[in-house]
Length: 218
Image 1: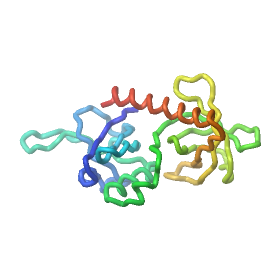
Image 2: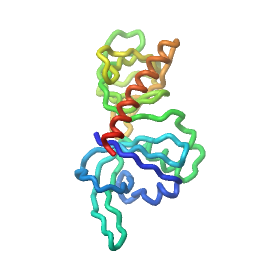
Image 3: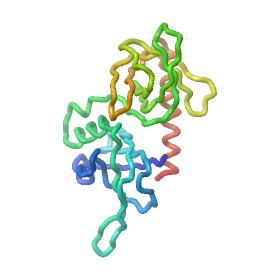
Image 4: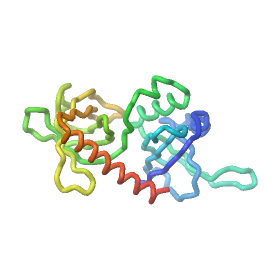
């Protein structure tokens, strides 16, 4: 998946490139790269100088060639996916100066597509799912299985480059169908130093994979 970096020095700069006319919202991304219409991309959007980037999925909705005579920049319109409503709302809130949105999520979430097995604490039955985003604070699990009740679960995740699944304790924080995807959000429950270390290692590996993608994709 192509990962693109976009740095906006201010909220006003982000809003000037925001595309409200697209059904799910989106941004204009200046580039001459030949990205196909409908291609899925991840955009790492950074607002200001100190804010860590927010990664958001989208699809190429249109392309336009540049015109030197009229100073029109070549680029693409990227429409955010339906599953990215929370990330879109966060970016718009920060860009508009909503202080509540600025502190709404402490940890950056990385979009991923990792198979995961999950089980309700105390019930030795594995259920299949997919990690759709992950951060040092928690994650979202998409699953076709019946959703667990609010309580503790164990996720078994194989980080990139690992052969053995990593068990992680978590608490179900919410469940539902964001963007039409059946699933639930969890907050990590590190019961000891080993649990904290496993969470940090998993996120570190995924972040490193994303860093390599930046080098290839930009």
